[in-house]
Image (cartoon, rainbow, N blue to C red; front, side, top):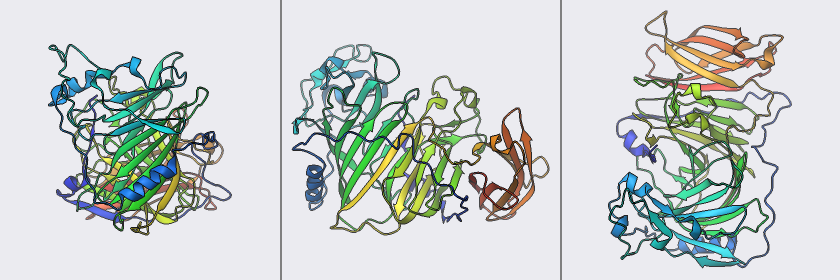
Length: 526
């Protein structure tokens, strides 16, 4: 499948949209706390003392922030100019030129410029504490003759540089060095866990996402990859971020496996007071699902890299927000204090959920963010951009601090980012396993909603349901256990009336009011 582009929210906003800040009322289960992400107890080994490290990158970022920003752009020449999608994919890194050749655990490919990748990236390997620059060298690449029948023109390198890199390890099969991580384009990076394929992306920083002023896309301009020792299960990567509004230093400690864990350390040096800035952003694609299928004529039941946002609030509430297909840009804000975790999740894991033998959406990973410190007041922000196909990333979620990141000051954050089929869910609460929606058979003016919860916690006594809406009315809500399917079905009808937007919410409780399930959330738009 072709590489998707992130759809700028400002473009969608031009067609009309709506903004809403939706604080979620805390409903705290007694004596319960949110779980850590997968592998949260793992700690990378302390590195040997080095000359070059995070503080050196932070010093570079602080100095960069004192200068006027200049965006690096390369002139694409020779065989790297005017490449089609297929031609770009036909340029491959020669594995015999691996900078980590001989390392039993890790390998690295350098990625060529061309196509949409015209921003040169400086890449260095840190050996014995000393960075060694990997200059752009076309001889390290091979060109598929089917796309380059006359051979490659490599005479003029111009001012081109590498466009990024990918890391390899023995992940799925003995003796095979599979890709598990790629940094390429702006501050985007993707990772996979064992048994998954590339799907959603993470980013270094999100600036003005969804703003009518237009989004600002920072760049990772420089990378330093610390050469792993032969026995290490972790690889450390430093990165320098630069943008019109901010410079920053990043440290990524990555441990690939059944859960590919990324521990992130960030130091930001704003050039201006940063408002509306997203930390730990995740970007994904949602086109349609049985819960939200707006005028789609497609043989597949669902097409998405993620089907919901999962959140564990600072108050201990577990939330599941179903993603939706909307006509206009939608921005939702979930106000919180010291969030325990959030992420974009692909809960439907069976082939039959998608029936796509090429894209294999059932193998796309989920991503879970857990702060390693208190982040204070702010919001988990969700941006949903209208799309008409599956070739644009249109979903963003991130943490937006309440207070601005002021200029001329260092702002530091740490968090864990776990890529896995599903995040850990240690709370003894019933999860939402499936959502469906469609026009009511009883009324042209109503919609039917089906929310299936895991039945395993309700073998003896059925809970009570509480369904609410911010606009319109809820009617005919009832619970029905489906033992053969293993779900407890909550069905209700939503009557919007004159409303054009409504926030729907449902939760299962005991007769005494004790919360027994996640709180299901959805936004309905006309």
